[in-house]
Amino acid sequence: MTAPIAYSEALDPLLSLDLPPGWVRGLIQHPLQAISREPTAIDRQFARDLAPELPEEPIATQLLFVYLRGYEPSNERPMRSDRRVTVGYFPSMEQFGVQSQNDQYRVASVDGVKDWLSETIPQVESEVDTWNRLWSALSGIHGLGPAGINNLAEEYGTLEAVGTATESELSEIAYITAGLPPKVLASCKQWDGRVPDAPGDQVANDADDPLVVDRSALRPLGHLFEH
Image (tube, rainbow, N blue to C red; front, side, top):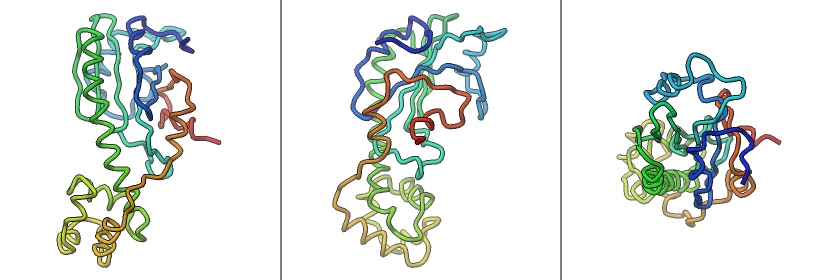
């Protein structure tokens, strides 16, 4: 496998790591451009490593891993952050930084990174697959949008738990307006268990490995879904 951009040799073992179905990985080409949020400790460490200025041809020191199963761009704008994990290498410290929705810390060795990924990837899949089940079962209800489904997910966790709630309990959830609770319960009961294929599934099958991800884009993987 030949990477399309220069990258730190420390990332080599992670570029050859086998990924489960539905996952893609990308080398982040511009790690410091257009960070649209408050920089994390890991962001600041990368800034120190690359200061005072970026090289003319940046060497990628970060890998992005994304779980695309069930991803439909029209429903997730921007992409849910719990689909993504990042692994970077700090040349000045000879350490790795790992970051997910729930974790952010430093790791001393590539074996430590692999151990972290072996734990984190199943967690990401579980959380995202739970959301996909909720969306598949409930998104057809007129008047119940992503905000309502998100609130149900946060309150109950799983579709099965939503299905055991009472109408009065559901009516207390924000964006579950009058008339929706019985429809929600009926949809939970009637759902056939099938999560339809989504554009993300095909992209995960067809994407180059590794991708080149330009951090300056607001949606780093959006170009994959453009026609």
